[in-house]
Image (cartoon, rainbow, N blue to C red; front, side, top):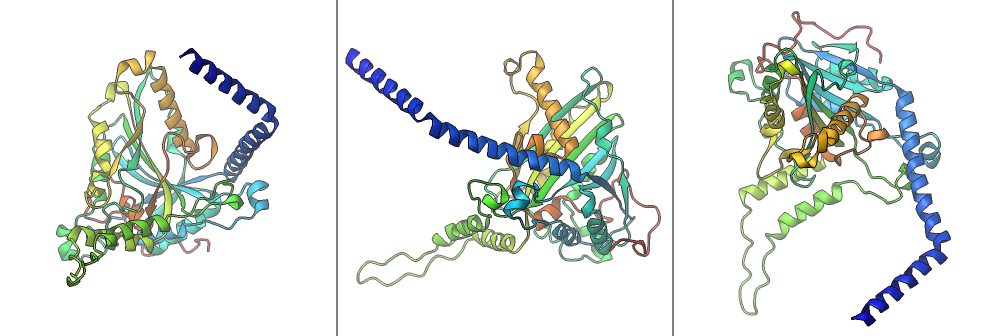
Length: 414
């Protein structure tokens, strides 16, 4: 026993000596990688800050006779991946642009916002007016900046949403709800718009309470050394192809024994037909790296903690057992009191998610990939969870325009 211990100690000393002798090699590599990551992150933060931001509010008309396909076309215009070279990446700090789609309830008044860099403002407005000529778009003050984390006056709870299965498995979309078929006016009562569940929940919020839902997106693409990544990261098409192949492999005919006839493969199950159709549809769509945050806050005297389960369940209508589901990711509180002595960790989490929300920081900056990893959604999936609802959504507190416009403003920049 003593011999074994002595041998292990000798080996440990040899290893320490080896590391010390060649420390000038491995330490240079480690410090070089750290400097590389910090420099790229610094450039991204600097460029994002200098670019500035604008918040656009979309006012809805009384009626919208458009399927979510219209919003899918708007989102396609936001798929701005850009081209990068070494100079643009490592000196100018060029990044893939990111946007924020926001569903907000302030005392039960429901609002639709899009946050963007100023240079994309005209593009987004033009696309919205092209697809929804009767809406009105205003550049507004940021509603989130007036909120300060003060435990003496308010309560707060925040979370991230994530996917239960791998990215290639899509959620239940508006096409699955058959909203891609423009329903005629006489058939409006039979239309089911899944976003109505979310809007009804937001509209049920009482004065003194607020619910914020933030969907952060940037164009999904492959990354390599030219885009600031030491390790090459391919896009997700190979992952989709792998899932397709996994389904097809189940139906390969078995090799017959000598003298036996070749048996035909079994027929596809309905579940696998749905999967193959969904996978192939996703391959044909533009895709976005995505993160979704949700925050509930209220004045202490107005707090209703029953609204937290409502926020958690506000995306449940997009779940499909065959396809994919949203689930709860990181959240600000803890399961057991001994995990958070004197509430210090929860307070730090609440301040962090609130500050990250205000900055719209997730892909870049000080909150880069903070608390959760991004997942991938296609334009079809994003348009399902964020689109302008039609008359089938009759929430009284959904802010709509009293009069209908005939066309977009004539002075809209091109």
